[in-house]
Image (cartoon, rainbow, N blue to C red; front, side, top):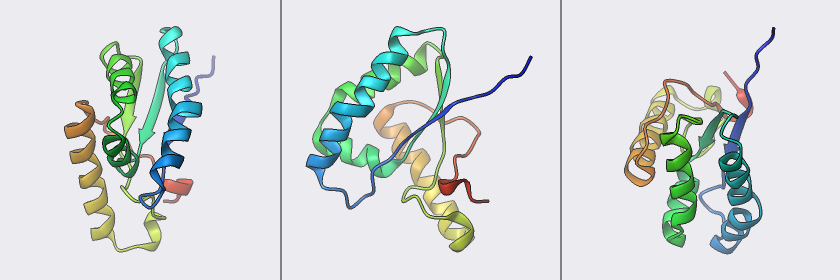
Length: 127
């Protein structure tokens, strides 16, 4: 038997206009999370960049956070660490990558109230 994992990547650039993020939230992110909530037998790894989390905090939208917390608490998802601003990691100094990974952990823990798995999602899958 073969096993495979799906990784869902939730990202908006830090310069994204909030009305666009709101639209993506309503038409994509929340419906996907609702599908996961309706299918508790399915498990996923999810990457949510902290640049998106910061925008969701600005929008004061609690629905996304609540759905993520519910999925996390019932063990249906694990959250992956990723550099905050979605850089192609091998092309920037390692200290900048480390700082962005640390910022992502801090932002995710404080805003989403969940821990990140000991796993990385690197933008463009570049290593």
